[in-house]
Length: 491
Image 1: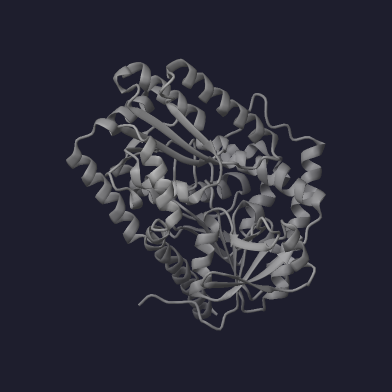
Image 2: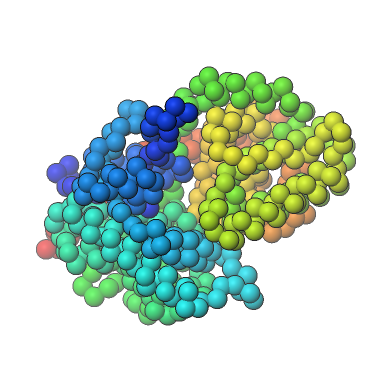
């Protein structure tokens, strides 16, 4: 029988962003919408299973006002009511924590993105950002969590923004249970040598302040265990997937995150999605190649365009008959590396469209905006979906697209995404650095036999249905309950 976490245990979840975003409508009235990103979806499911408090940084003016109240507030959105504790952080401290350390330093390390011949330079600027930005934010989050928790609390921390929180909470609440999920890849030991020893040790020891450290794939969990051996010389039990730390045992687990297929299909029935579908179909050519991504270097957007360029060179018969629709969400526009990357993306598209296009047809339709109804409409009608990330923690686009697609569209999937561990056998798998292979994969996807397309699409949908977001939450709660039970039996 699967154990569950006792209902009386107070739950606190923590992430950099909160569950909602605050805006103003044209008349100036406040509007509350769901926060961006997949993290809101997964944490909402956690809080539906076990009510609790969400601790987040105060990023907008309205959130700063709520933080000034000094306690948790209730925020309503649709059928969900969130209890949120906002953490007020001075703008210059937040800039150092987020724009210098978390992004790009940690993000780039964990996606193998640094061009080590030139970047990064760990100078006084970076060490100051760590000491006076990242570490103070860890302490601020820990203080808010402790204020909302008690000695028997369950505390679930999320992602690379909060690597240093757990030890502070453990010292204040030694009886609390701490769990941290890392939503991005965990790289091999050598990649961490970019950081000075004190910083990389702090990252590992911060995570080891938890009772369970969790990742999307077995590969990432294995990398973390090996890093504990290579960089900290700690004893590891590989069979039990655990790190031995004094009198404590830290479990290291893999839970592949997924989506809520029913909620996604319901969202796709809205009038706004229908309007976007009509607009898309009015302009649709015979073939539609789609990508949906944040405008992030890790997503490998430029190589995807170069592969399409090569595809058109090799198969000119597709000219005038295909559109590559690229729906890109703006991302981290305060980070220099992202600004430079965006400019490179725009130049690449312009060059390819000039090279292959004509007065009646442009091969790449690039849209840089955040328009979820448009994304849902495009999911329904693609013939091939390109997900060619350099490295990705999971990549939920690879799951969302096949669930909604009405054409048995083919998934072209990077072997370096977390999703590849579950879906790679049913996708056209590619090396994200191999332009020729990606060009060939686009051709294979567009010319595949109908029966094979249908079988692959059915298999992907079956995997996603079997491993829904609800199962992801249940698996974590089951392991938490098992570890609590083991501690009680031992003790």
